[in-house]
Image 1 (spheres, rainbow, N blue to C red):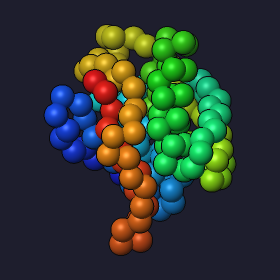
Image 2: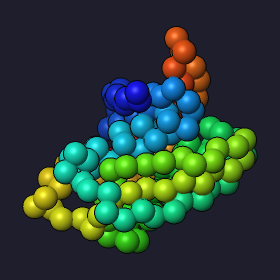
Image 3: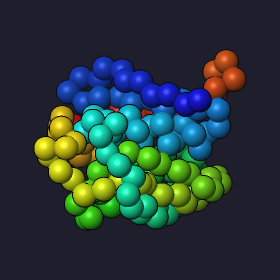
Image 4: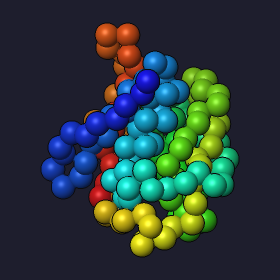
Length: 138
């Protein structure tokens, strides 16, 4: 089962997604990012928004994935709580974010994440678990 955690980084915040696969680590990283903005336990995955990203490598794809989710949430006036990376290759990712229209009464806003950055960007494996980490600009 996947999990996510945080690490301090000056005025920004570091996020780490953990999973049994790199795809699951990407999904958990997205949960960590959206949980900085709202209480994701209150967000129902009523609508799935497709996400497609390309990048030079998997590290770049992690940042592109997170930024594409932020962009789609902003464009659609939504917040996401469920994520699925359906296909992850060396240079391409496709999946979806599941969520609903943003409702401040229901979702308890915490703050804004402006962007995922390349700062602190690391993908790896430790003790049989994969992780994806980076810093997000608050």
